[in-house]
Image (cartoon, rainbow, N blue to C red; front, side):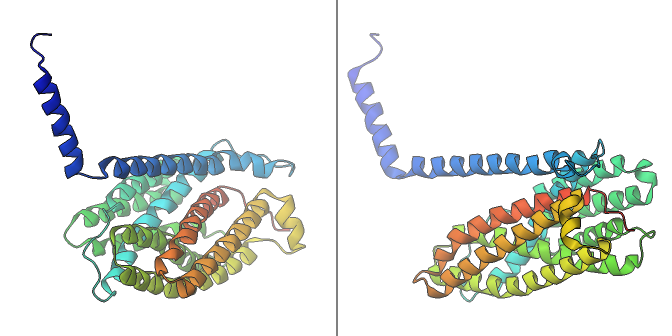
Length: 332
């Protein structure tokens, strides 16, 4: 204790106070960041429960039973769709930001390389679970998706990250071909609808996520409002395309007969109905955000409903993954 002098303690305390004075608000920045990270972790965990528990819940009371690997396949599909949305949306949002006059230089850190790893793992594992593994048609397409995600991740790390658009287009095409095997009637029409539907969905959800991330780095309200306005105009077209292609794909897959009965008496129909209701809720949130964007003094006030919208879109992605793992209703 003789080595500890009061002057040392005072000096240490003054240094600590001066250090906190030099960096005001350091703790207040760290805690919200940790809180947001924990919130994202909890939301992702809750979202994973949808594909994991969904097959058995959707099949309850229908007389059909879920396959043993349907929950895993649903989770892998949801992870693949989420990775695709993040990567496509990052390129899309970067393009919109470049169109904003006098845009601030700040850009959020890229998530595309991490999303590429998730997409690769999901596609490769899904190929292993396919009948006859990677030797089957579905397995070969899954292997192609895994390779495309790898190339997209390398492009994201390069000096020209925009080039990842091309391997991501391969992922979309491979997924469309996987969803419509040659055994079904007019598979090319179904694949074409899926290409448009999946592309527009990825631009819609991923674009909104990365636009909101960009706005967190911008302090200029005018530039932020301009970026939101650009996205809102494109999102209206994307929503129309998603709605039309989704409706056409559903009508092709459902057998002829009472639609309400098919939507309530089959596992596929129940999940499809849940997805339709969720997309409707997302549309209302988007309309709310667009209204606040036009009327609020600060256009960034639209961020609040937009954040709720992105959470709802995450649920839609999880439900979409579940939908792909369920058997189609039998056509009479």
